[in-house]
Length: 543
Image (tube, rainbow, N blue to C red; front, side, top):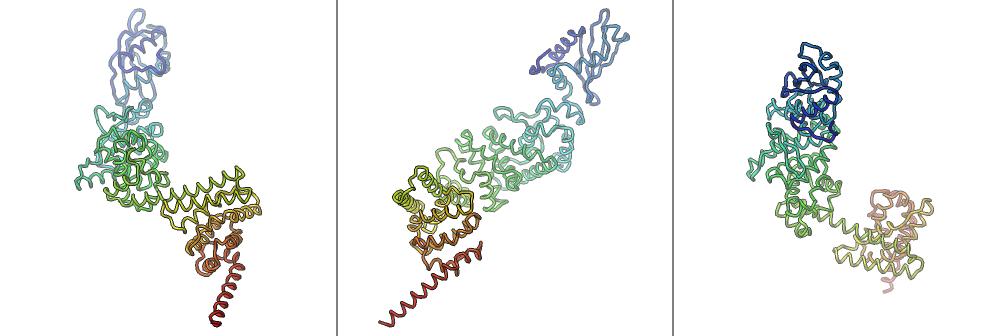
């Protein structure tokens, strides 16, 4: 008997396997006929050797399994000393390699109701059964095709062969190792695959419209199928990665179709942008193929969506900070990025990239402050005044350098510095300890903020940012008033800035709470400001 991994691909090999099996059980085959298909059942005839004469038996394979019938005058027991039940049981319990070969040799043309029996063995059989399901339907009758494929899910194993299913629906065939597409020898490509439905495009406006129309019909089919079989959504996302990994094997026209179809699916939210990360592999980026595909896909996407949607989709897939990774290695700089998408008339991409790049720079600045302060704490560099003074000087210089490099104004640099200073605190669990930690951190590193608040605009930006910061972080909400007081004492916030915030500039988030916390301070500052005005009037009268 053959091992499970053996392959039997010819009728001769099939007969040899069966002969060996029967001989081992005191049977022997004298001859056999070629398999034939009738009424959804595969038939073959075996002539078995007996002691005195041959016994002819018919072997049939259908949905219910193997059956054996006699064509001889003498009984089976008389000829070979074994019952028919024994032979039938033997045929059903042969090695997996033999049974698989029987199905492949005899059942390639079984009726659709028998498709599940044959499709469970090889992806090729599954592909052929998909083709058979729709072969009598007009290729343009998408409603009937959708209904037929929907119903076929009751017999075909979509869950097990979901990857093959979508390979066929996209390319028209199966993607073999190496990225080569294998089509059915007789039927060719699946007529409702993306590569068939979307017409080839040579740049002409009419053909572009036909390409888009065909791709839309295809996406409608995909969405309908996955609406019925929800598990196919995840399988499609996984299969999309494999399909994209082989775009270097497809024609330019097919890649255009693929970018259009996938672009439509991404634009509707059916497919996320995560599979596009596959395009960043070196063998796809080195010659600009990934960039061309990505650009074509974005053209389709932006016809259906806004810049805000694009930014959100890229961020969700964590691609917003990796856009240059689609470019060839020697062109991954801001200048090449902007020139490419400017030539493509896609200012939206340039805007997204600039915004993302700015966010990355800001995040990097904040992270650097957090790292400096935490490392200083570990090394006990913040235990004495000299150490804290050195840290403040270091951070102030870094902030000024960042302002020059990135052309930031004080109003931006100061709020980023605040995020880094507060973000470096390793918060305790008890509320009273948290407030003490926050106030100590503010007092200790206020000199950095003082350097960055030489203009009224910067002071107002800082106090409004702190208001929003502590509103979003409930553990710090009660500390707002005392934080403002400490910053006033450290000459970070002036009396005029605090009064302006309280009377005109407070944000709506938590406004009533924070005005209550600062009420005493604001009244005191207003009184002092009034006294200063009186003194100025007295001086004018003396003159």
